[in-house]
Structure formats: C-alpha cells, structure tokens
Image 1: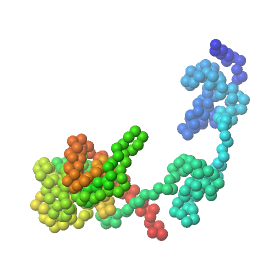
Image 2: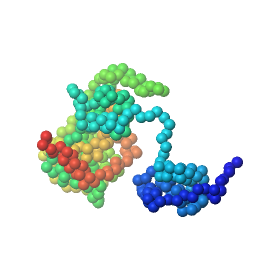
Image 3: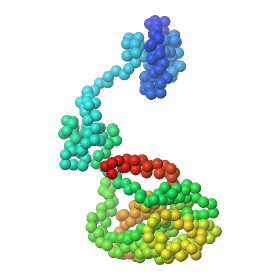
Image 4: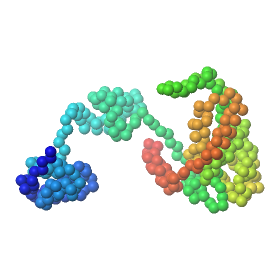
Length: 365
C-alpha cells in the first residue's frame, strides 16, 4: 500500500539569490547533464511553493524522485544534487598516467622502433598492456596503422578536378558520360590443390601457392548515370586497342548523344592514332584526370568490385575460363546495374589537398 505524506508537513524550501541563479543556469544550459538539469528544475519548482504531486506531474517524473531530490537539497543544498560516488573498485590509473600514454603515443617513439606497441608503452608508463589498449581506444589512437598519400604534381590539377567533378555532379544535357580505364594483366590463376569449401565455423580454405595460365587486359567504360558497363577484352592495351574500344563505345551509344570520356594520362590515350580517330568522331570529347589521381575516375570503383567479387577468389585454369568469367560478370552487373553516387564537390577536394600541402610544406620538406 502506497502512503503519501501530506505536503503540509514538509520543511519549506527557500533559496538564496545565488542558489536560484545557479539552479536556473543548470536548468537552461545545454551543456548541463540531463539528470542534473532535471534535479535543478525540481528544486526550483518546489521553491516556488508547488506540492510534490504538482511538481511530479509538471515535470513528468515520479513523486518519489521529487521527494528524494527535495530532501537532499534541504540537507546538503547544491552539493546534494550531485551524483554520489558509486560502489566499486577505485581507479588504479591516474589522470597523469592517461595523459602520459596519450602524449608518448603522439609525440615519441621507442628507441630502435618506428612506433609504440602496447607492451612497450605499458612498461614505460607502469600500467598493464590492457590499460594502454583501452586508452588508445578511448582517444582513437592506432599507432600500428599507417596510410599512404600522393599529391599530384599536375600543373593543371585544379582545372582537371573541376572538369571531372563537374561531369559527375552536373553532366551536360543531351550527352552521356563514360568513365574509362584499363585493367591490364589480369592473371588466370589456379591453386595447386583443390579449394576446400566453407563449413559451419570454418571458412573456405585454399592453398597459398598457385599456377599462372596467362593474362588478359580488360577495357571498361562505366556509364556514370546508369552504372551500365561496356567491356572489351584484349591481349594488350596499345593505342590501337584503345581506339578500337572507343569505336565500340560509339557503336553501342545512341548516335544523337554527345559522348564525354573520362580517362587517365596513359600515353596510349594521347597517341596519334587516337587523335586522328577523335577528329573523325567530333561527338567524342576526352577529359583527362590529374596525374597520380586514379581515385577520381569512377570506373576504378567498379574495378574494385570486380576484384573483390570475381577475381580475388576465382580459380581459372586457362585464359578462356578467365575470359568467360569476366564476360559473365559484366553481363550480371549490367542486369542489376546501379550508378555510384559522387558527393564531394571540387571545392571540398581542393580544400583537402590544400590542407595536406600545408602539413608537408614545412622547412623539413
């Protein structure tokens, strides 16, 4: 049975001007923890003379909650609204040790090594390797990882970025945009032992060594609007082969549309044979990506899907088998084609490149 004590027996709650100001700040400030803000509102409502029942209904909390924080405020004033220490094992790592782990990780390296391991750093700081791992995780530190970057030296870098990204974000009317590249020297590989199939709890297993059975080159043109791919297999990737691939694109594209081709700076793309062919086909226009900037060519994303889902785990005992697999992959892809969505603007890309350049343009470089 619930017994409610009459509000008439409660000790009046009176606030000083300083207490009221502090409580109002806690209640209104966005950075205040929600629990503390609610307690401040409870005390302010009680100080205005409202009953426990009225305060509970007004703030949407339980009556016992209002009674508890009212009583704690009367007993300890503002200090009573803070959370009491919870039971448990006291901290064994000080703030100074946490700071030392972070500072050493960011600013130092162990003697004779290029980066810290958790065990080496734990010995230096005097804590356990597990504690070092937890601190690294809390601060997002991963000293065992590294990434490479390459800044293009193309004198027309900015112009080319704006040109290519403009085709992705605002393609011209009455035109189709193709992202074109070659994937050379695709190897037909077979394993020296049969592949062991996946079982419950056991992944697919294959021998580490393999046999080569020849190579083939793949030309691919990704329609950036639809995701459809035009592919052509060739024994090489010379200027004549690239010219023939452009002719293939020409045959398979609506003759009423202009064709914009995004490609890299491979010498075969700028050879006289290609140049003469382009003069005879004025609806074609080539747009070149900056040097060392294959990431801006969308067809590279499609090549990554091809590698991951077809080639990486494929077993091909001959070039013919590899050719069939590639043709089937392109056919299946086109049956469920979807475009890759480009979201970065030219200004965002250029701004990021400028930030990298500012980091590596010091006296030491």
